[in-house]
Length: 240
Figure (tube, rainbow, N blue to C red):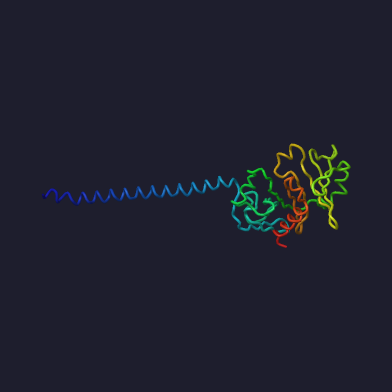
């Protein structure tokens, strides 16, 4: 009996120390499991987004004398989703919603249904004295083949001469009463089929910016409202 009495405290001490080690081990495993779970969710979300973001936080980008305030989910490249000075800003938006990436718009941005509906916008300093509409008479008319052929919704399509430098492209021109004509260049043939946005047009916006927007050729049928809406959207993003 005396021997049992002397061994009991030692047994309790060892047992308590062992339980503490077991508890710590389980706690460490639980923490590791939680970390892996959270990390997996974050990494999986990053993979699923494929470079997109659904963050709508406004970012202010300064280009020369103009300030653009755009939501992060409209800014095309991850490195550009920050406040500060830049030489160029690339955006994209869903048509006709004119919004950036979201879960609801994932199909359109991934073009998983084959319905091309993304419009790309690029802001950069002006390097020309004329935008595309004003270049029609002095430049494009000398480089295109006449007569043109009828296109959608009153647009006329002109092919370029072999020496123009615009291979596999056509010029789309739409007359507007009391306004400069709508003028855009579009890829033709196989290059057009492979491109998400084979047509492009540039206009002047803000104080000293040139806006180039690229769009699916299918949207030529909606050129009047497209041009008006894109220019209005770009102007709304600028701090005037």
